[in-house]
Image (tube, rainbow over all chains, first blue to last red; front, side, top):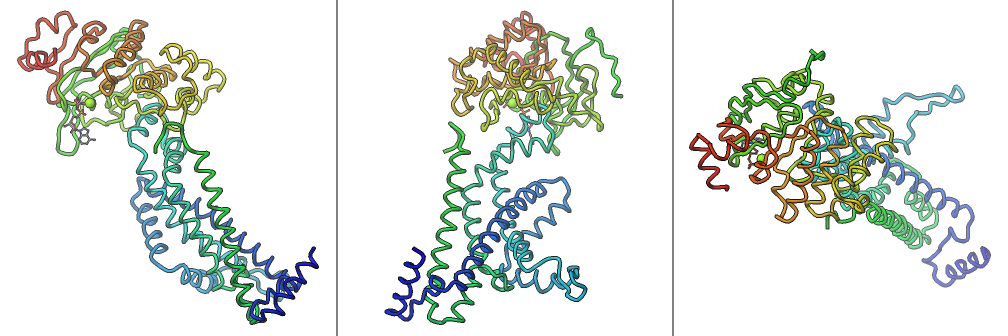
Length: 251
Length: 251
Ligand SMILES: Nc1ncnc2c1ncn2[C@@H]1O[C@H](COP(=O)(O)OP(=O)(O)OP(=O)(O)O)[C@@H](O)[C@H]1O
Ligand SMILES: [Mg+2]
């Protein structure tokens, strides 16, 4: 089977010299694709999770009684929403990266405790998180004051009202917008290329640099992989949306 | 302060010269009222006269600027007010039901006792099922608010309040959003409660109900209590021209 695939793509290359799917007949290149793929998956999963957490916490802080806290969250949102994520990546890695402590595994090498993958996760999570705060905020605003008051009258404290009443309702309202933002986030992980994170696009770029005949195939694979990844994300978000639907509530 | 020496022969709810403003708008201009244990008090009056504001002050949903409100001797107008202990004593039902839309009927009823009183879940569930029977909603345990009629939702809301075993129940125009057919179901539920000896304070426009069930009727206008008395004398011998005019319009 494997041999059959190898032969197929070798033959294809023979007949069409611009379509060298080298990673389908060269073991080393195949491993680069696979490792790039998993880094992309890892980046996507961590960024999605952290950005959602940032969104939830940020929206909670935005409703806090402290003006200073609210201003901080506002400043954070303005900064990350209004500047390009590409520049944010460069800023985090090259500017902040200088100040992060290092450790030395062998007494010679100085290894920073946050790798470039770590910086990409941090930077992209904060980028998408800024949008998530806004998304959850508008979801929270859609929860009627009177529903919260009913909980208050029953003796719920602020935290219980937020976690048991406001968030579950706000989440449902926010899901479509959250869906969009997370799709954007997954696509934006390609920009981690800027700080040499060995994700899919980075590896593919490497491959077609080494083998110019692999340019079209490499880009094709990147497209196909992203269509697949985003497709899975959208499908699972839709499934979740359906599972969370309340009988007789909303449209 | 926390130590109160309230005894059941003193008023369960006692308001003395309560003043309440929203910004520069003074809504309550010296309201006083005593409600004994087991009494049912109806508050009537034109729209905007401060009825809702007043009963919301009793359970601390609104704060007051001056005067005093005590519930079983506990002062509500106290910066160090223990809101939780107040809210365990006072149940409230709203005009718009305000059920938690993402929880079904039985969950709506169980939520506060489990979360706020930290009671045993199975015990609470047994009590919740008993309450569902009491408000005549057998078979609707698993229905979500969106699947219930207004009158059914309102009865779930009453059961939800009762699940906290309050000593006083506040009802703010709880039948105002219902059609005439369903008004009766809800009023029957409240009358049962009053007859069992629950202390009730109702804001209502249902004069027939007030006449039949209330021990005292209070007429409010523009932030003051114009007059009050037991229904027999109140309806026949209203003295103030404002009361007479209001009654002539509504009866
Ligand atoms: N949160 C608030 N902020 C500012 N003004 C308020 C607020 N709540 C009520 N008011 C004002 O206080 C006055 C009394 O309102 P309240 O709701 O207590 O009247 P009500 O007697 O319950 O009237 P209705 O019969 O229409 O329910 C009104 O003029 C209203 O506009
Ligand atoms: Mg009102």
